Length: 192
Image (tube, rainbow, N blue to C red; front, side):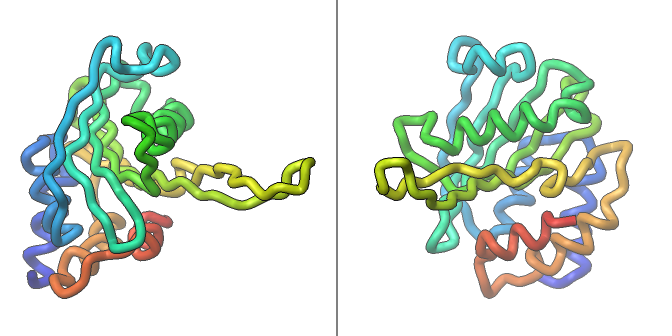
């Protein structure tokens, strides 16, 4: 794909209200391939800690760079203010999901569209699980989770936002049809 085509897709997706079909097309072009693996959770399937913030969430697909498992999610928020003010909750919700919420299958990261109720503005985020190993009191080594800060890994996008920064970071990945982007390359793109 040429650079102009990639810019057009990024602009059409990120400078408009959230549209699941347009977002799915964008993700497929951005990552070069995803496995369609949709499901949707709402109501009782949303943990109590998040039910006041999240109305539904769905997985659009799964992606692997050969080493890491990355899910693509769309999370619909209940309140307009949640898009700006509840980043910690958003990160913790996705961390809950990545930590094996679906049958214990752990994921390394997620590309997430956090969508406000009016859908005009939304947040496109990369949430990644980091593990470091620590020695416990009994001398055994165990993994300790660490989360990347949501503020460092998000673009605020939508009808009322311009996508210049997102274009400069995402277009080179999208224009590269030869390689599937690895998690490190995605981190670099979202690290603004």
